[in-house]
Length: 223
Length: 209
Image 1 (cartoon, rainbow over the protein chains, first blue to last red):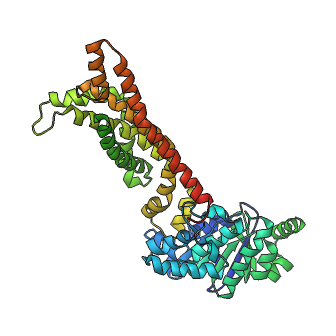
Image 2 (tube, rainbow over the protein chains, first blue to last red):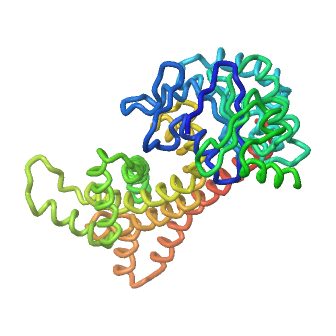
Image 3 (cartoon, rainbow over the protein chains, first blue to last red):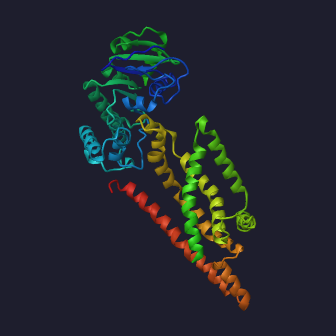
């Protein structure tokens, strides 16, 4: 597969379960080992044998399907842990930054709560804020709405919309086709670990070139 | 009371050593293989040997070697034996706790840029320790009772003085008193853990502190 993502671009990965969307995202920040091939972020080669993953990961924010907040920490500690321990920001400075971010995404009153007191949508927004607190250059979203109650999907997608407006570079895997259509600069259809087709959303959804893409979109449309 | 002294000293070392052993067994890097093997052998060995045997071996064996500059105190060697034996058990409790933390927690921490050690220190261990407090306390209580085994080496602790008393007067009330003493020591420990756990649950359910 060959995939380039430009600065400020929003690329959406679609495809059936098992087509390789998550694996691709996990390869980008080194959670999955790459057997062959090359991945670059800016001027860093992620797949180089001597790469410092801890450093690479500071530039990449990733948000997972299952939120993965740290249950033994308050929302504020969840968000400030990495800035404090990795970047060496002082507690007061990091908390200031964290509260600002939480405020922006409507979570200001949740700062001292523990994650299991929050709704799924709130937890996922905290997870996004936690990733943003490291000021990443790229954000990866791995089916971030798949585990959510349909009513809560909207609030999470709103956050992603806002990030796009700010010019964040985003790669996201999703099953939300209408959202993909709306927010993507480019949509990639993955099948069996390959990028079968990539095009701007209007083109990919309007006139897909491959039979596999067509049958996938038809199946999704029926749900 | 000698039993409590032995217990407290032993527990202090056990908690630290067993954590190191548990972490050693969890190392997955190829370079750390010797450490992992050593920790595994240690646990296998001391879980297999009866505690009473370790106590006899160290308590009578080491003084018999007549090493210079090494203490012959039965209390010291009895305590060391308890530490060696119980470290193996407690290490397994820690390890079970560490392994019960879902890998996604580690993935989330690593993806934020935390190093493997930072992830263990700030994300995995705090959750793991909280989960194993009840089994950990169980081992504490067992250890508190096993301090009586040190009496085999001769020092006058609770069981030993009960024995002396009983054989002098042909009156077994002393044993009953000793039994009640042991219950009295372990009881606060049990209540303490219950309380710790309740407090933790309440805190997390209440949201704010």
